[in-house]
Image (cartoon, rainbow, N blue to C red):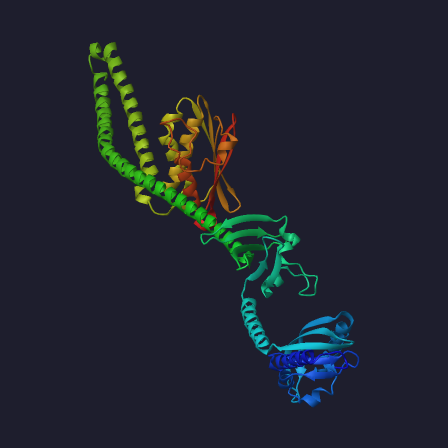
Length: 529
């Protein structure tokens, strides 16, 4: 041939061209041939016609960017210029604008083909509608689950690549509210790098299900619980899921509950102590009642022989008077009237009578004091004279004071008051016995009574050893005593304190080692009257 191409070569070229065209027409992707100078479409395959919805002649009259929506034309033009300049180009996502105004998502790749002295751009467009639909579906699912996670009352965050460079994948709304300063304006603080978490007090917890937790006390007063769990994806990358709970209110309630429990325990201890004191007082009252019954019986039994002794003594005195008058009458012989031995005998009998009379009187006073102290006939509240109770109690403790303790009475003018006399007498007894024990050798017990505003004050002061300061706070505690073993039970002052409190009064103590002790009892007049 004239151009130097043989018939065989020409045949092979035609076969190659036919093969190319068949492959182009049979391709599943849209293929466009674009002129590099005019940017016009010069060749299309059948798939391009189907995907664009245009006829071949319509496509061949358009430029490369005119088959796309208006908002993508600039990007398509940039792709054309890039291919002309560099020989290739790729855009992950564009759309075909179809005649019915619908759009089809396509993935575009272009390359520059040179043949002889000519050049043409081959653009291959793949329909990615199924993938777009799948991505939309995935996005919808993601938005749905993120919406659910945003509704959670706790903060939840996910980080990936924690074994390399951690990267935040997700934060729900509650987590952002906990740590973000200004929402999502780009200046927020992520929970994993918040400065407030660096130096706060922490407490680590490993739960039974394998979750690792850290309780953090933030400077702003919040208490947050961070619970982490981990999983590994198919690419062997570790991910962290962290749940953050604001447990400030719960911790506050726990503290309040703990305090309430402690307060309840204190109240139970206090009530238990009060019950024990009441029980002790009840036991003591029962003992006093039994003692009172015994005293009443003894007084009754003693009164009968005492009465007989007194009566017989009076009869003896009258008889002795008659015998004396008869024997020493002027009509009697001098040998009898002047007998000195007989006179001494009768004088001794007179003296014996005086001693017997005084002894009988003293026994009667003691019996009366025992009866007044026990007051079984006045066990209920009654109108009484406080001085009478003090006097009867002093009579009973006389044997412990005798010959070593002087009792000074500074009694004021006091009205009679309503009280339980046997209980008040028991208070006097306990205080006076303690005063006697406090004075080791000789000393003085001063009893002062007076009125102070609307109260009656009874002070019992001794010159004994006094009470040390560390013991003053405990002297009214049941069982506390400074006496030696077998001397005191530690119940006397506790019972006295409770009795005075039950009468609406109070008892105070003043003491100094080496200078004695003073107990002051205050009883309200108005309340008791």
